[in-house]
Image (cartoon, rainbow, N blue to C red):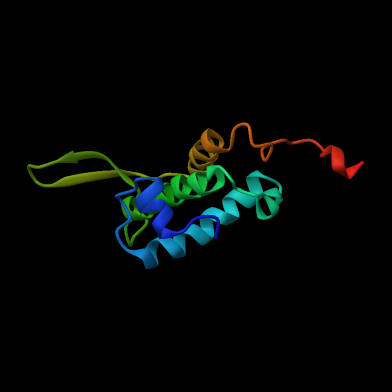
Length: 125
């Protein structure tokens, strides 16, 4: 994993995920998002400044929030709620929308690392 629960609670200052097992489970998914976004270069990156760990924490927290809001039935976020005769309308968060949010979070931390470069690295020549 690119980040630990200690990275999340300490360095990142995360408070949303309180269970280490939940963090670890979702961090595996966050790693897959980061691997896709960096074309697999994240695995070999020396994270001296902790930017990759921060990106992993941010993506993991977003995945946790998405999971929490979607609930067991996968309903999505509350769009509208009415108290009299109790009526609740949910807005489903589509995969494309979630992917865009995850990429934006990761890019905020990975900017300037070279991991987001979409071309062929010079070393490959």
